[in-house]
Image 1 (spheres, helix red, strand yellow):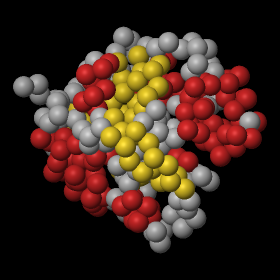
Image 2 (cartoon, one colour):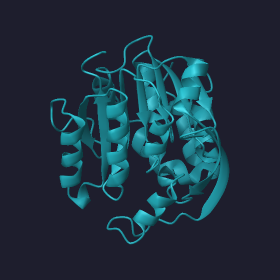
Image 3 (spheres, helix red, strand yellow):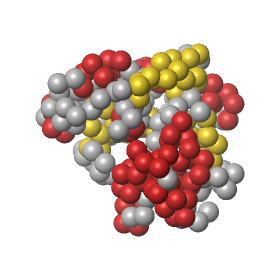
Length: 260
């Protein structure tokens, strides 16, 4: 499978992908970070599993899931990020790229682009509104809009099979993604932000309906679970609401501890 280092280095020096250079420098070429990610995700992902990576950005999570032996269906709507993903994973037939956003129903949607910081581009106008004037978000500008196709998790399952794990990182559109899932899965994660806690609460409500009953959280880019135990949706909601604004973001991990 290789380290993809040649493709990443070429992308760093390509003027067409200049806006991704910082992300490529942060997310690739750090063996310690890779090892920590792999150790963390090994509790959810085993060789031969199917994983959905929804909101792939530059694909560092794809890399981790592949090192763990999983087949990956990666969903990304941004042409710039897709250029990078195609270059990095061109020779890997166990990675399938879907050029789309993921949402509540199939169709098309306006996608708001932050050209200086593509990692926070979003399909959620509420997310952009919430960022306006918020501490830590002062310099973020969504200066473009493109129309992109929308798929759903249910559609992906019908086409590719049932995943063992789903990673959802879509900048305030996580509740829409989960609205497009109608069946229980073994485990998933969704990103939350402190400027969009209502989105996270809707996600927790939806997941409880789907049968998820165990939740923990990792803050920021840290790959360690904060609570060290699975709590119910109500306790996780209270924990997220109590976080200081400065916590900014993280990922909620969700499992079914009992199988009905």
